[in-house]
Image 1: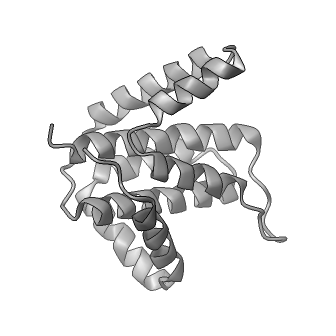
Image 2 (image 1 turned 120 degrees about the vertical axis):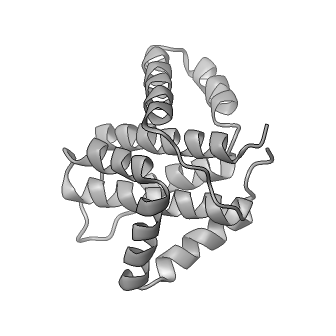
Length: 165
């Protein structure tokens, strides 16, 4: 399936940012009804993080899900817990195997691995490295790596579910 265009990613992110908290809460409830396993995955796997890292992870999850809805203008089939865990374990194994890899190899592996939805991955990575507001603690490198793993898993399973092939 064709990757979601950068303009849709940007437009969706701006819409989510501009929405009021009540609207966002209602949208999150809808996601919970449509994708209970996926939302549970994010909540359960972030519960031991610092509150600001949890907030960032859930916010980015919400934006990523809305990007897929908007990008493919379709209801996304339910993702099962088995699909999520299988994808998470594959991503964790990949990241672990790349820890000691040479920099040039890492660049090439990243291009290949992230090619399915490059604009969404770029958005997530950029969000981690934006300059935080003065009253917000920056995320640790460990939290960034862990949240990236979780969000890459979400992107991969949603990409699989929206790909008709």
